[in-house]
Each structure stands twice: as C-alpha cells, then as structure tokens.
Length: 490
Image: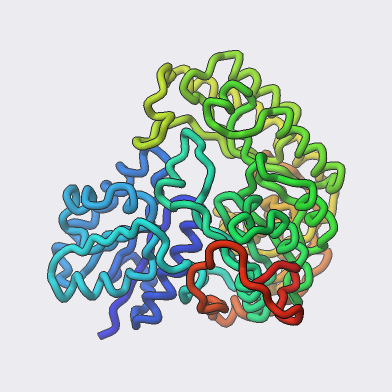
C-alpha cells in the first residue's frame, strides 16, 4: 500500500526550498502527498532563529504522540535548523520521533525512514558539512507560477546574534551554469517568476573567484525566454555593490524590489552585532538604488532590544527608519540563542523595555508604509495572481497577487475567469499599510502557461542538473563556446 506524507515548514525561504526537495525525494521513493495532516509520515522542517522555536516544535510533537500511538506504522521525522542544533535532544525529549536529520543531509530522508522502519528504532543522522547540494535533488514545487532557486547555501558572516552559520555551515556557491539551467527549466515549464536564494547573495561568486558573479547572473536571467520576474533574497549591505544596482535597473525582468536588512540604526549596536557596515553606508546604498530605480520598494529587517541598546541607540534606529522610508519592515524583539556570542553579552534588556521600543518602531513603520501605499492610489499596477495570500478573499470575493515591486494587491475579478498564474492590470483604489486594494474593473487580463499549469493541477518538476557540490578554488578553463550567458565559468 502506498504511504502518504505531509511536511510542516517553519522559518525562512531556504526552508521552503528545502521542503520542496524533501517532497520530491519522498514522491520519487513512492510516497503520495496527503491532502490532510493524517499522513503515514509527518515531517517537521524546523527553524532555530527565534527563541520560541523549541517550544513550538515540542508542542507539536506532543500533540502527535497520541495520534501516532493510535496509528501503528506512522512515522515522525524532524529536520532543518533546530534538528541540526538539538540532535539527540529531540529523541530524548520526544522518544516517539523516528528520524532526526540536519540541514546538510536532506537527501538522506527516505533512507532514514526506511531504516527506522526496518530497525524499529529512531535514526539520528546529522552531517557536519554539506553532502549533496539541495538544488540537485528532485522537487515537488508548491507553485506553478513562481519558483525558488538556490544559488548558495551557508554563510561566511559572523553576526553575533545569528545562529545560521553554525547550522548551515560556510557558504557554498553553485556554478552559474547550474543555476541558469534550473531557471531555464522552470521557465520552460511555464514558471513566470523566480527568486534567487542565498544567505548572502552579494557574496555569490567569491568561492570560485568572481566577485561580480551575482550581477552577471541577474543579467543572464534577463535573457531567459518566458521568464517575466526575477527577485532575490537576501543581500548584505557590506557586500552590496554598484554593479548589482546597475544590473537590477538595466535588466527588464528584475523586479524593482529590494530587501536590505538594517538590523539597527545605531553604529554602536551594529559594531556589537558585527554587521560590518554603518548607518551612513546603508542609507547611501538606498540613495543609489532609488537614483537608478525611483519606484523601487525597499523592505528591511530590524532587531529591537539587542544587548546594551540604549535609548539613544534606539532613537538612532528610528531616525534611520524615518530617512529610509521603507515600504515594509520585518521587526523582531531580540531573543538570545544559545551558542551565539550575543547570548552571553552583558546588559540583556528587560522584556518591558524591549516591548515598549518595539511598539514605537512598529507604529512609526506602519505610518510610513501607509503613506507610501496611499501615494499609489490611482496608479495602474501589473499583478501576478497568486493563491493563498488573501486570507479574506472568500468573504470579499476578491483575488490576490503581487505587483512587480512585491506589494500585495487584492482585486475584484468580476466575471472574468482569472486563474492563479495569470497576469492582470488593475487600478489601485486604496492603499492600506500592508496591501493595496483594487475593487474597480480589471483593466487587462492575460492568460498564461503558468495559469494553464495551475489549472491542470500539475507542478514543475525537479532540478535541471544532477551535479553535486561545487568544486573548490577557481574552475578549470573551458572553451569559449561552453561559457554560460553570465560570462563566468560553469
């Protein structure tokens, strides 16, 4: 009898990408995706960035304990960053878990499940370094119209608050030819939008000796037939260079959107965070971006309450937010993560102080976001129709999607047979702090191959390349005819 599976994903886009690979591996091994949570195999792909990640996982595992006890043969697997961090602790706290695997050995999931069944014992396998690049694995992609494409894994930065480098390892870059092959394969399958993923996309290429590789990669994506939108996340201000800004501005399918993590507007706090840039450098990048792309929507990440943050430090953050005029900010209250340098810093702030500052920051950014979105009222925007982003669409009889600058747009389809994956043009009638509303008539509707694929219920397939880890050092010389479009060696 065919066994079913479900995957519960927490955390960042890299985890979403990895979950698509886990799903592809399981389906290649003969599993079928479950339409509900009542599956034979439940996989948790975990995140360890926030303080409550542990409690959330163990709470979910506790809820599944009686379910598993009542269903002989059911298996539970835990992977991702928290699994990489906690290792044997998970099985000790939740002995009904069957498999624990880390960020470096996603490919081992089907084998570990089979071994756990055969041995009737929990299998814990945590690799210390990357064994197989996740992007070379088969995938069961969630979307027919948008795809994640990893260009690197791991991170070489040493931010004192971040646990990611210790869990994902040092940065490993894919060859540009491999990345482009995957992008081209997705576009050939009807995908209209790709997001290039990396912990620090701006350092892409350093491993194989080309610091300009990311800008070249963006330009190369501009030549991919059928690809209408290119996004990327996340850049780092330290490594952000003018050639990338030029590539964004001069490549028509690269979206006028930039997510640039600030973390703090205080130079003293940035120094303690080991962020390797200062607020003036950050604002200078934004000025250069807006000079080349006046309509670019810029978002950011900000941490409130880092150890030792004074009221003056926090005011410096508010000042930078005022000057930066972000379209959106993802704001977080600092939480110490065991194993990070910041966790042992003196002057950890009281919760009440952090909460009060957090609320002031959110109020300021809400007003800025609302001002920016109200300024778009009356403007015509192009929307790639999506699914699942408008939580109230059923009640409001609207559909939702993303504008080219990444803003969420809710619109009224009227009598048109519009599908996720189609492209519409609508006029913004109202700008709210977190979205735009267009309740007037749809100005234009373009049916797309992505919409056809979504309607058929199929999804783009696996990776286009079967290569393993990238080599170390400079790549060997290749004949000119073999060089990829971005001008660096594959």
